[in-house]
Image (cartoon, rainbow, N blue to C red):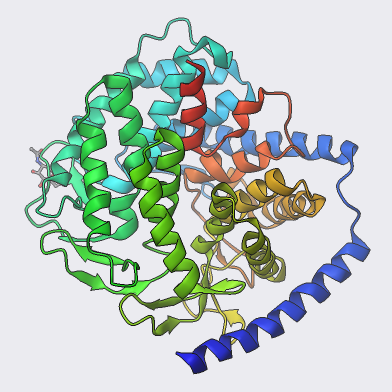
Length: 472
Ligand SMILES: *[C@@H]1O[C@H](CO)[C@@H](O)[C@H](O)[C@H]1NC(C)=O
């Protein structure tokens, strides 16, 4: 453990030298964003959003997602217009009343969940349930300026119907849900009993909001129970593993970390407290966060360790970890957030994108983890750090990331995944979260956008929901 730690520290110093020299060169070449440039950038992001959204509507809708190179659609989740549902609140934020209204009306008339499809509980919750609920709040609320006159709670009814179809997944001895459920038949007989920590711990916001909107506590209860089920099985040093058996409660993968398979467990603990004011979530978050900072933080990086012994497993930067500085801003822990963001962003600048895995011992892309599937995490952290510090370097970072997407990922009908960050190879996929999160976060940087009410800036969907709820 000690040796490994020192090794990492050594390489961190090397990489930081690289980072700072890089910033130095960059500063001397590029001016900071000026107000005029900010306007141009805002228009560019708008255009970008429409290129992707119209590409989806013209070539893929009502399939789930767009294949932006071949200009066709594909069903990746349940075959129910996933990208449109996930994009609804982005349309509202753009101020596009026409597209928002017609989309809400189409969904209210055409969407059905009584289909024989086995879907991921986690993905369905964050993308479909979250999309429906935020659009419901916007469409029914005069305060957003986006009220849809013909709207009669259709999206709320759909959300409730969908959530009831997910409920059978929670019927386990631990309260931690199965990873997947069939929307018509409940949990399949052969369904795996192993699920990820993020899969069981990233449901509280959407289900909690649904409980409050329907006055039925069941949704909030089952998801809170799932969090308790996970936390009850933490190690003696307050770490959680990556995968768990929902029947026995045994950890089947004991690597603790803040990236893959665990990430949003931490995120939803804090956001559930911020959204509902429920101190149980804050209490768990504080303990979990302190342990993460003690055992996983190797300033400025984060590593994966065995959840019981804290022995180092992987000295790896994993691109999903990049949400962490943003979460630290929400938690009020800005200094480590700044250092970690600088380190993570240095990886982005080196390749133009972050690879899924970057090896901290060799300082190279991790074999088999070369891709960048249009993820929003680093952009989200950049956004929050700008909000917290107003330091123009985060605007510059936003401009850089925008340029990367425009030059490297833009393709015929939308934006393409990058299958290899070293060669910028494009791949024929566009995840719905590109519109729901990645581009939207750019839109929300003031560089880009400032003519909406201030509370619109709480764009992370959970917080966004809470802000609207507060206005009611
Ligand atoms: C549901 O789908 C599965 C697999 O796609 C199929 O085997 C089964 O017969 C279907 N059941 C019903 C009731 O349609």
